[in-house]
Amino acid sequence: MNVVLAELSKLRTLPLTGFTVAGILACTALLAAADQAVDIIMYVQAGFVLLGIIPVAHEHAGRQFGTTLIAVPARGRLLVAKSLATAVVMALTAAATAVLGGAERPVGAAAYLVFIGLFAYAVAVVVRQLIPALVGMLSLILIVSPVLADHGRWLPDRAAAELYQGSATIGALGALAWVALIGAVATVQFLRRDL
Amino acid sequence: MITIDQLVKRRGSRTVLDNVGFTARPGRVTAFLGPNGAGKSSTLRILLGLDRADDGHALFDGRPYRTLPDPLRTVGSMLEGSGAHRSRTARNHLAWVARSNGIPRRRVAEVLAEVGLAADARVRVAKYSLGMGQRLGIAAALLGEPQILVLDEPVNGLDPEGIRWIRRLLRDHADAGGTVLLSSHLMTEVADVADDLVVIANGRIVTTGTVTEVTSGYADLEEAFFALTGVTR
Image (cartoon, rainbow over all chains, first blue to last red):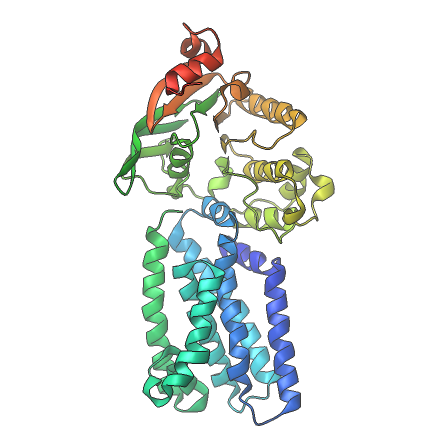
C-alpha cells in the first residue's frame, strides 16, 4: 500500500501530470461547448496517451528510476503499484471527461479512454522514453488507424472503440486482449532488464 | 556487514567484473577505489539490486538487497547525484521516497536540515547546483536512519566545506557502529576518512587492506594508487 501511495505522490507532485489533466478537461469543455457533432473522445484521447506515458517516462528523464528501484527493489511489487496508481489517475480523469463531454454512453467512453491510457502506459514500460512512446502511440491512433479504415478494425484503438461506439462486449474483449498482450511483454521486460 | 563474493558481470563479450570480492565491516569506513571505468559503479549497482550479476553474490548481512523489506531502513545509498526528477521540489522528492518505505514524514524535514538544504526544500531540483544535488542524494540515503551506507562518489561536486562535512558524517556513522562503503576515483579524497581500502582496476580487485597495509612500500597514497591500478602518470 505504501508503494501505491508513493507512486500516487510522484504523479501528484509532478507538474506535468496536472497540466495534462487540466489540458484534457479544458479541451473537453471547449469541444462540448463548440459543437455537439464531433466525437470529443477521438480528440482528447491524445491527452490520455500522454497521461499514460508520463508515469514511466518521467522516471527515465534523469536518474529518478535508480532512486525508485533502490526504494522498491522488488520489481513485481513496483510494477503492480505503479500500474494501480496510473489506473486510478486515468479512471478519475476519464470519468470527468466522459461526463464533461456529455458522452452518449459515458461508461463506455470512459472505459475506452482508460484503455487507451493504459495501453500507452504499457508501451512506455517497454520503450521507456517519452518521445518514442508518444510518437508510436500517436501514429497508431492518428495515422495508421484512420488510413487502414475498415481493414484496421482489429487495431487496439479500433477494437476498444467498440466499447462506446458498438458492442460493449466485443470492445471489452478486444481491449483486454490487447492489454494482456502488451502487458505481458512489458512485464517480462520490466522484471528482467538491468536498472 | 557487506559481503561481495566472486561477482562476475559481462556486457556483450566484455567482462566488466571478474570475480570481484571484498567485505565492508561495521564500525569501519571502507573506501572502494579505482580509476573511472574500473568497475566501481558496476559493483555497487549489482550490490543495490539495480543490475543482475552473471555470477556471484552481493549481500547485506547475508541477504541480497532485493529481498530486504523496506530496504531504506537498513541500507542508505546514493548513486550519481540527486536521483530526483528536475521538476520536483526536494521536499516532494523525499516525501515519496519516505512514503515508499513507510518512513515517518517528519524525517523529510530532519534530513533536509541535516544536509543543509532546509532553506531550499521548496525549490525545484532543476535549480540546484551540482553540490546541492549531491546533498539531496545524501539526504535520501539518510532518510530511513539506516545502519549501512553505500555512497558512489559522494564527494563529487561538493565544495571544500561540503567535503569536510561528508567526511565528518561518514566518520561519525562508522564510529557509532555503522557500516560505510564509499567509492572514489581519487585516493587523496578518501585517505583521511577511510579505515579499509579496496582497490579495483580493469574489473579485478588488485588489493584490499587497511590504509597502512595498502600503502606500505610506497612513498605516498597517490603513488600506491597509481602503481596498483597500473595507471601511468
